[in-house]
Image 1 (tube, helix red, strand yellow):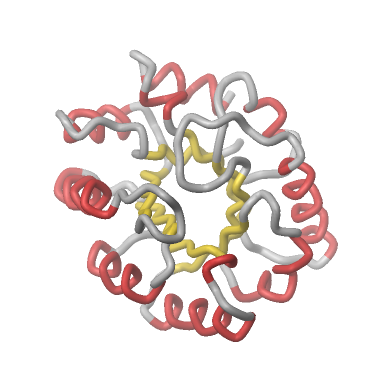
Image 2 (tube, one colour):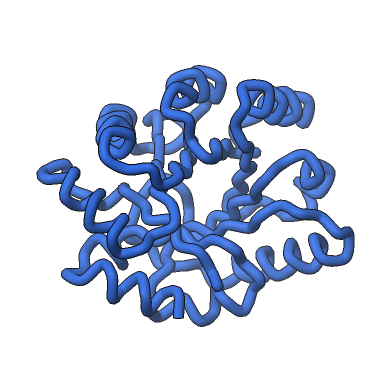
Length: 219
C-alpha cells in the first residue's frame, strides 16, 4: 500500500490546529512540510511552514517529512533539526556539484536525521544513481517545484518506474516518494510505478472528509 504524506502548502493558517488533528485521525502517514525560500523557487513559505511545524510538535507524534526547496540547505537543516523530523529532503539542483551533494547528505545524517534527495522534472534519474546507497529516500517531483495545485507531468512517472527497477536490480533499500499533482484521478497511475509514498496536498485539504479521501487514495 502506498503511504500518504499530506502537504500543508494549500492549508490556510486559520484553525491549522484542527486540520492537523483531523489529518491525524484520517490516517495520513506523514505531515509534509514544504519549505521555500523565495530564491530556489519563487514562493516563500518560511514563516508559514515554521508555524505549522511548531503546531504539529505540540499536538501530534506523526512523523514530519521536511522538503527543502531552498538554496542554503545547511541553514534550514539547522532550523528544522530541533523538531526531530523523520526525514529532511533537499534538492539535487540546489547543489553546485556532486561534492556538495555528498557534503549535504553527510551533514544531515551526522545530525541524526534520515536524508532524502529530490530531483526536478527535467533532471535525469541516472544523474543521482551514485547517491542511492547513501540516502533513505528519493523524491521525484512530478510537477515543477514551488507551487501547489499543478497538473502532474505524465513523463515523470517513467522516472519513478526506472528508479524502482534500478532499486530492485541492485537490492537497494531507499524509499521512493512522488510529489505534485497527485489526486484520486492520478493515483492509479502512481501506484503502478512502484512508489512508496505519495505527497498529496490540495486533493486532501480541499475536501470535506479527509478520512474518506485518504482511504480512497490508499485503496
